[in-house]
Length: 143
Image (cartoon, rainbow, N blue to C red; front, side, top):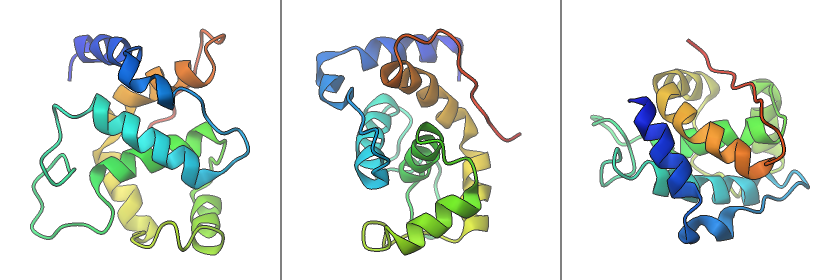
């Protein structure tokens, strides 16, 4: 993916279709924020997505789609949940009904590493929507 894609994405996120997603819930409602970020990610990365909302062809369809892995990764970072142990314990205890297709942590980590380029494409423009006054952001990616 090129730098031009990031510029296109910034322009796309300012589009009128996405204005309704520009307000985020700061009350740490993980599911509400996840839904908003998933829709933004789906629209922003639509040119890369296959019809089954995955980026790569898989023999077996995964429980959690690639776009959901991207959205969950960005949502947890946006809400300040930097520990995957905390994220998964929260998802299993407080949000088990909202995330019935949750994969195990090792599978999530493996897929998140594979999708890091797509996560980076969406993370920076979303961070500008969440906090427009900040000019500097730290995007933590695993390599």
